[in-house]
Length: 442
Image 1 (cartoon, rainbow, N blue to C red):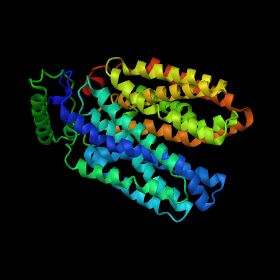
Image 2: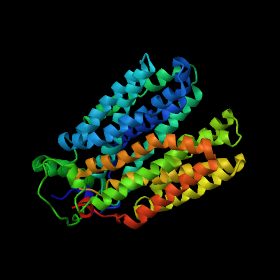
Image 3: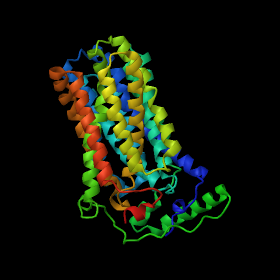
Image 4: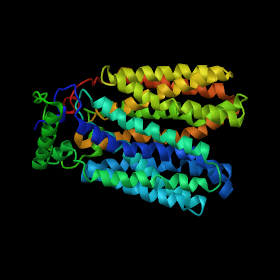
């Protein structure tokens, strides 16, 4: 079966933009729900009179749920399909947001944010795969990056909301507001097609063929000429259920190990820097107010990383874009740590966040290309869960190093982790430029 969106064409059909725009909503929810805690934690602490330990529990509870969501949504997606899984995630977003906004105690708030984390972890795995399985090879990077750009927009909106609303009760409205885009996502997904690759992998060839025929017709009508012949691929018998054991088989074990190391290290070096940026600024003698202002200013740069990526996403090998971004993060981090001059700190921090966006946007597209349909979401969920584990434990490591050796030592750790990220991808990462998913992962 030839999938229309895998035909060799440089023009993106409008319907693919529609699918990507709808799929960007869970990305926005991901970014918003992850970023809102930085602004909401202060009023939450004031209302519940939280101690340091309870603050850590509330702040990190979403990471626990994200690990559960990343690991379990692969199996869910394999069984019920990409579309239904995204719709399920939208319902969980609604439930988690409402439960968080009305929580009468910090313990119930932490539990409800675990539920939100489940949706965050699930959406971050299933949605990019859904887009990648519909996108043509020459535009796959740009379309998946558009989804990831919505994550940056969500984080930016969360920062704006958190920066402007600081009264005690505002945090409940901050969190409850996420219900609106979640409901919009649920309604929009009703009109979206299921992934024909998932249908074909489960032996539902007639349903897959109907969707493919419709997509081919739309593409040819929208681009104004017939599609060329599809790239020859190796077809394998349908697999009714993808199994985790296949992730560790001889074909895909090197990729599993490479991406697991990547996520373990990038979460420590990348998100550690972002999460601890205000603390580093304060440690370097900058006031709390100025620190928050600088952080907010640097956060404005992140969405531009997506726009930068869109300009060259499919022109260069994705692995080398990731390697280059990791090296840039390491270099900017050292400059950031060595200076106390705001005229140097703000540009260095902004460049670091810009490079972080390039890395983050690219790895979502890259990991979606490295596993076959039957285990794609399961494999991505497994490797990505290491980033959540790393993020959960890195806070304790960073706090200990910061307290005993100061900010420069922490930045050296972050730099080392990003150098190892570059080394892992450069030596073990396969090339994916303009190759079909079936050719990359038969």
